[in-house]
Length: 565
Image (cartoon, rainbow, N blue to C red; front, side, top):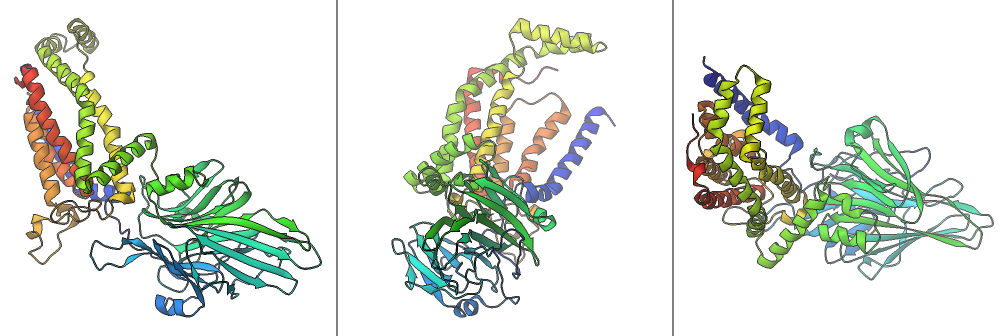
């Protein structure tokens, strides 16, 4: 077997590994279509702690949610963006749906349910209380008295209770027009002795249905001691709890698009922790430092509770204008945050201007390529210069083929003499890698593209193309395997890459020609599971590249010439 054939066999093996192994890698590190519409969880069980005692005592049997909600007295929640209720038994916010977001793209789809009561499927709830060290607060199953039947923006509700020692307990709940609750926990000491008062809050849930990946964190998350902590993971908590003490920050649980987090008083010191219970239940809780409350005095400790969608502008507003320390870090932008956020805001501006997210992606691509056009010109000029000196370089390689050191010295001298930089042609590719990855993160991470239609059958740019010729576009009654369910848009992507590669000068090595001939179709399979929005970006950039190549080939005709053997 000659060397070229060996090279081709090696490439074929590598291509097969990429083709059939990529779905496994992609599902772990680059999830493209996770089930983001429901939050599943198992049954809830009590959780205990030696230093703080926020608990989530719940029924062991899973029952119909409507039945569970009807079993306890409740205060309704009505805002422009939320519907739900507060459970007066235990003072829990455990029933919440997001009116602006649907589970699917169907017109009759139900809104996203974020919080659900204990004992129902997908139990996910928040509760508030006080530590029992030296204080006798209402029990976890105590029924509170509400000052009003409905909680609305501008119309707070106060929950009241008392104990036999003369202490009065109040929890005043208010909510804004978006997703932020404010919880004021007040204790009035009508007894004869001072008492220590330490308020706590907790969020309790099961494992998220969204996959946790290297690029998008899902699960427990906090900001403490000035930095965002994307962890621990669910499995970490199965081994041991995670604790921290901080002034300022927050803790809770993040899904791909949704967030439920506790934001204690940002000027006060608090102890936070994540811990696991039986049956794959998990809890985030905090405890404020105790304050000694004298007889005849009262103290109020304030916490905010965010429960809603991770909208970029909204999180930025809470962070910059309302003092929620680094709440915008709930979006796992990563190291390219400084690049990703400007891309998002420009893309979002285009979308609001035009009204179609797919068109906005196309215009974003045009903008990026226009900014990079001067660099592309330098790349083509460098390629032309490299091709011009290729015969001389081949002669040097033949002359000094037995002396590798001398060969490298002569090649470098040739580059210097001809004023050629072999790395200049790589610069646009190097620049595009972080831009492409930043756009990938923007499209996959932000909720703003979720369920956004483009054209015809593309109803959700955040999901893979659902239409595939493998089953004759749905006419045949079977669902093809994931790795061959190539949609129409990925096929168009492969075609655009094929024509782009065809425009490039053909390499003189047969193995290289074979590699470039098959590479577009390998990449077509690799990109198929990704969001259509990302594929639209790549198709657009390929088409622009083809136009740029035609223009630059006209300026550098030497590039059209085949490589000299």
